[in-house]
Length: 407
Image 1 (cartoon, one colour):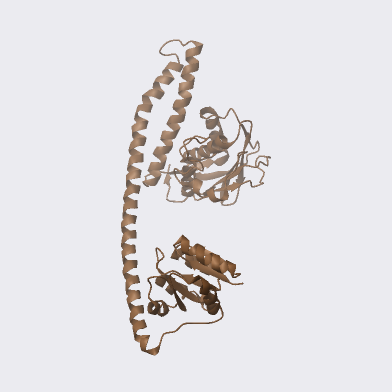
Image 2 (tube, rainbow, N blue to C red):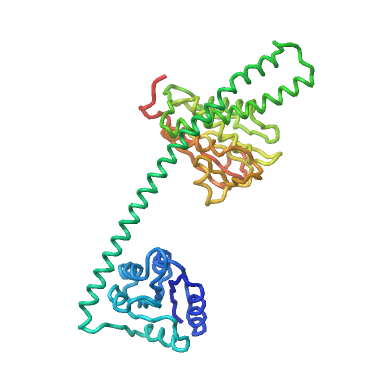
């Protein structure tokens, strides 16, 4: 039994060839485009390759040229199979044979057996010059096509850069437009709750407190939008001063408990958080830790726990946040650190947010000489608990980079 790779974009032709060859006892691997065919050829190590000349992206001639440059395929016969291709050009670019379409079903299996057995077609000496000219012409066409694609890619890249610039400007403008009316709203709510504008009934106080919680949530989203827009524009300003990361973690937990919805989960902070003196921007780090904590709380089911710990190294310190949520798929571990990326981005998703918290935390950690990583079901105990959710490690250097401003 031989393994045959068939590169053909016509599904009817693929089915016919597969039916004939499988009936003859061969294994058939199929693809409908040249780029994937090149990848499969290097991966599956076929005994013979059938190439249609008119496949999309790279055509069959270009595919054959590329296959002939792969050392592991040096002895593998390549057979061009097409209705419109040229036999001389096919042989010139490296094919060992040529089969015209429509194929003769009764003879096809026997023809393939001949090539598997060592048969190779060759042109006469008189046609050697013609083959050389055909190869030169094909090479020129390849270069022209590549030049066109490079130009297309350059234009696409320029459009993407312009779109990124417009996105940054839009994000910044929207953030400021949202932040401006928030200031009087927050101020008047404070006056109302302080009864500076008159005494409140219990029902009125309950309603205003509910409005204040929603306003605080909205303000946090706006602040995050402003932070991310400043990061993307390169305008985020960091200070460099002494702090203790243990104090920063405690303050972050207190802030989340005050501003966030933590009533449905249990926040377990290691009672013996070790002292972790460092230099950097404690305010930015605290906000980064709040985002990591908020993300863990959001994905932990009601009645679950979120463990918070701290590891101190010689050159770096690490905040560890372990939740009891459903975990993150391995394919999504890197993506969730990108701005606006959410594992479930549908309008009916179970969890809120705009997908900016972890992106902000990562940028801050990197600016502080560290980084952030995510592990699914790690089995690592944090604050004495071994939970089966997701572990986020936020690391910062003990001494932040010198480029930060003293403050």
